[in-house]
Image 1 (spheres, rainbow, N blue to C red):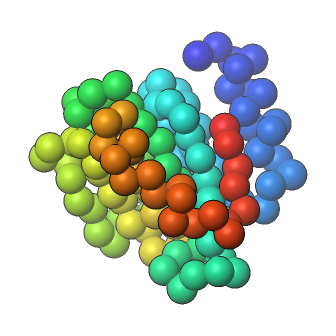
Image 2: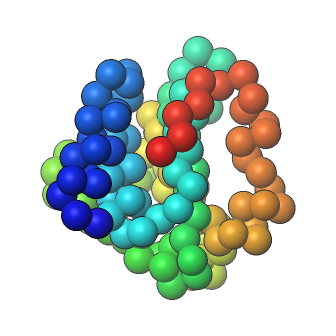
Amino acid sequence: MNKNELSSITEKMKPWRIPSEVKKSISIIDEKKGENIVVLKLKTISDITDFMVICQGGSSRHNTAIAMEIEKMLKKEFKIKPYGKEGLKTGEWILLDYINFIIHIFDEETRKKYTLEKFWMDAKRYDI
């Protein structure tokens, strides 16, 4: 990804009322070539979390690399660690739970199987 593409994504996210940590996660996913990034704003409709980020990678190794980079950079820049994490060993569906936001990283087949977005049709949706 070149600087123009990254700044385009950053510009697009400016008017959205999304926390910096979530925006940073989205940028990392994009930099690592994650695909079909969706952010759901659940703040007013669920007690589970405020935001949910859903994306997919090309393989289980790719998904793990995305998750590890997110964890590393959020710890470095925001001094936060995930409260919980699941799926790093298999990489088919990785979940990083930061309490105020949750990140789901799927492989293509698993994402199609579970279609999490359909569970949250009432949520404000941001497609990246």
